[in-house]
Image (cartoon, rainbow, N blue to C red; front, side, top):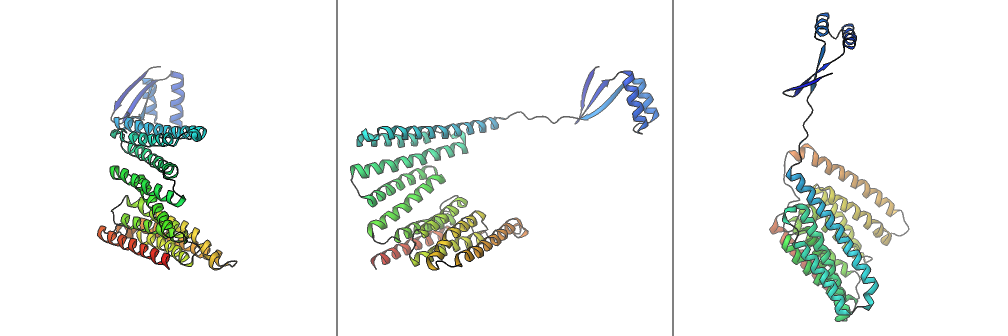
Length: 377
């Protein structure tokens, strides 16, 4: 049996020489089934071969340089994460074994060296790794932020001999400056989020230092910083907007909940959760709606149990709010995928930078004035 292949456009013709007896049987079957005529069958018996035309196999594209670069970037990123975790676990194990035997200077030197090494590792990430390199750098610098927090914790306790609230203020404020400095270099969202979280903790611990007897005011400080963050993200002054808005909204809900069990704190938490849901509907943002839904699930039962203990109000409120959330989600999904979206219209999620900056300043001043007034009352 011989095989001869020839290409013509997108089709290939293969010639297969079959034994005479087999060919006769096949041709007889085809004639009986009406597939071919007697004249065609006679020519096929005379030729003694069968031509079968098959579609050409699709060519398999060869790997490109971009494919190799992407695979290399992902491998380097994965190894970087794995190596960082191994180093962290090893450092914790060594510290647990010998921490008590180390002097304060040695402890500070070890933690400071770790922080510097992590920052240096971020700087030496090759630019050619692209997005994978940016993610790896952000994770390394986030770890360095944690190391700086540990350094300041040891320094504040063992060197400055501060009390608990002062230690928190020192650690949070210095770490916030560190994270903000790293963020200004690369504008990574992890560094921005770290700086904002440290600013929230700074605000809370500062309020504790000034008004130590009011346990609701620190949460108001957290809420104020988160509100400023959300407004600046809405105005495009901080980005990316799709990450800043949900993160800031979640921080606002958490900050408002830490003002419990004060009645004003309950009102603030309910208003915050409701506002997040309304913003999600206005912005047609499903992620923001999820934040509002989770926030409502956290706030509502606690609020109802404070105001209306041992009643059916809590489950009824959850049923009503849950149904409203489902309807809001369906409405947003329809607006995002329906004809109204294609028709155009103003995107409310994109705010004006000047308006956002003025609103953020107003929120900061209002929160500060409220803290002072309540604290002095």
